[in-house]
Image 1 (cartoon, helix red, strand yellow):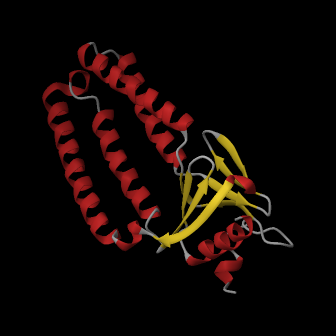
Image 2 (cartoon, helix red, strand yellow):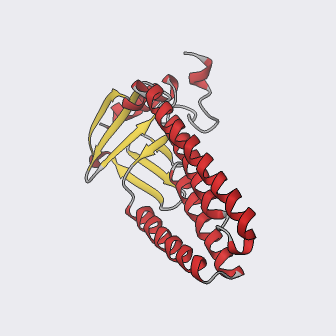
Length: 215
């Protein structure tokens, strides 16, 4: 067993039988609570943007900034889930929705398959990277021209181009985290599906070992 396998994280393995405990791994699962919060924030962000454009005050400026940061923080937190697995259940630790516990009888099937993102990561990096560079260039140029012509008070809200720049940065970060290893794990649950994107072979093998015992 490699040293990397033994030291996945300080909390990855308990003494005695191995248990996955709060392992950080990219997890894709439909979370209606987080989705609802995101939709509400986007609607508020768009509404505030419209109001700030027509009737700008220091308050509309700051409230727009608040919603901008809230959306970005929410997206980041959605990518910060952790997973725990013991002999009887699987737990997903979500910073937004809290702990989701799935007993072994809720797990219908576990599939180990090739990672599409890993297989096509180079072309995806190129496409998203070019889109990000174009977006960054357009937003920075637009902000500079607007501020130079109208000043901060009447020009484009600086948080609008900042949001687009950080959003594409997040997309690159998300793509990287979902394309680091050639295998993914799909877990069919009742109801829904969970997809795990382990970042290396060590995490993949440990997750596979514990999920095989649950399935």
